[in-house]
Figure 1 (tube, rainbow, N blue to C red):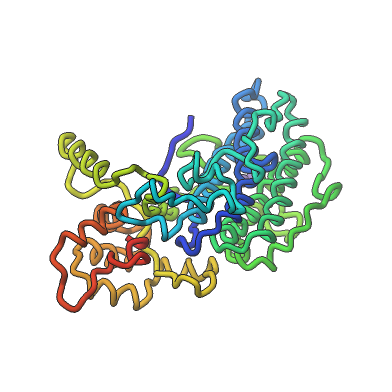
Figure 2 (figure 1 turned 90 degrees about the vertical axis):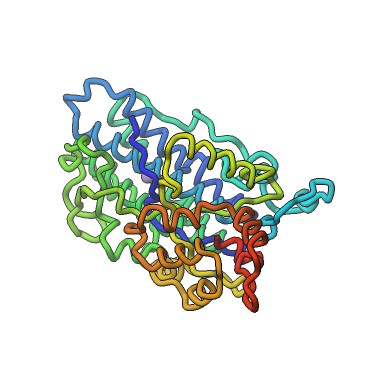
Length: 409
Ligand code: MN
Ligand code: MN
């Protein structure tokens, strides 16, 4: 079974300019033949179908464990796509469908399913908008066949990531591909080591590809510098302990020792909470109403006033139209909010906003339960309507009044 933890494997930059055309390309990394749904479900089915596993335990553990990591990759691809589909213009108090707010959709270089079916969300499709299919799964029951296939699957996955990196310059897509290129490299090495430990054949020498200049990709470099290119993380509290019997030796390119790492997954970054998109009624035609119902249910269930469950602290505002932030800028922003954001919170009479900024000064994984959550989890439209209902502080414009302010709520 899968034990789910509400964290992201790595940080992504906060939403900036929307890029629906780029989001369409990034879908290849989700539902393409060599996308994350394929790697996840190839290894998942191979692990389900693994026979006589006690006799082959280290190999079973390797495939099962990498399958679990791939689930987290799907989640990250979805997060990047969602961020790229988030549009400031869609954060409005009320939308009149009769005014055709989506009229421009027909002429846009995007996947209309992202809006019409997905409500500005990721879908299990490739970059052509075709649904992912189970035909992409190779699970033959033959260990050597499957491991060799997995090596080439990771090869195709890395080629795809590099091409998507070249085709899309949105910071969310760049941060995503920079990370996934490094992790795909580890998986490629893992399956090569598995085949070599089984047969003596070194696939990395026979088929040394794809040649990805990882160190020249600035979004990959931080992960390589901290050693992620030679580490396999164990994705289970107690199981898959025999991984290291197969994932061993040295990295074929750098010569550094390969390593299996046990790490507390709750130390990974908190997920971002994206604002409501009211032109597609996400999360609902009346976000206020949903919130009232949820509040009532929470009260009835005896839950505390403060939401249990955390999201990332609000990001440093990205100036619209001033070019795109890089992933490293976003990482810095998550650690150190800009003076601007602090100034805004001082001006704001909104208590929740103040709490959120205070929370953002703490490390992401040490945010006190509640403080950041309450401000963050509040859908933008609700925050806006609250700000309107509250008496205006003289001289200070409520932050939520501006569109970009609402986005950051
Ligand atoms: Mn992956
Ligand atoms: Mn992989």
